[in-house]
Figure 1 (spheres, rainbow, N blue to C red):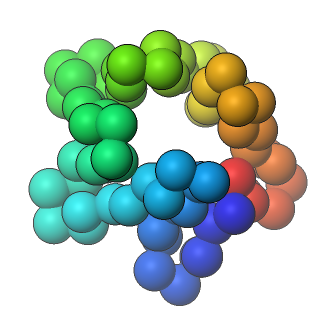
Figure 2 (cartoon, rainbow, N blue to C red; figure 1 turned 90 degrees about the vertical axis):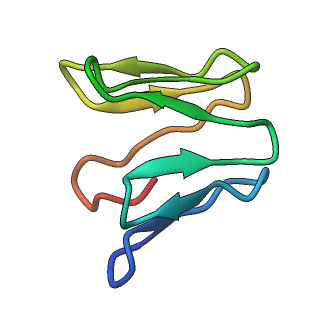
Length: 69
């Protein structure tokens, strides 16, 4: 679920966004590779750069029409 006013993405693992550094941090230590824009977590969060759809083992899906994750 995306709060479009604050651009904070929330998941059941409480994914929070640091808007100043654009680094996403979660309790599972989500790290960002700024050169490739591929996000990696211990739960192997992968990014489909063509569609910008993020997939996790907890099946996080993005609604591209409404921009609600």
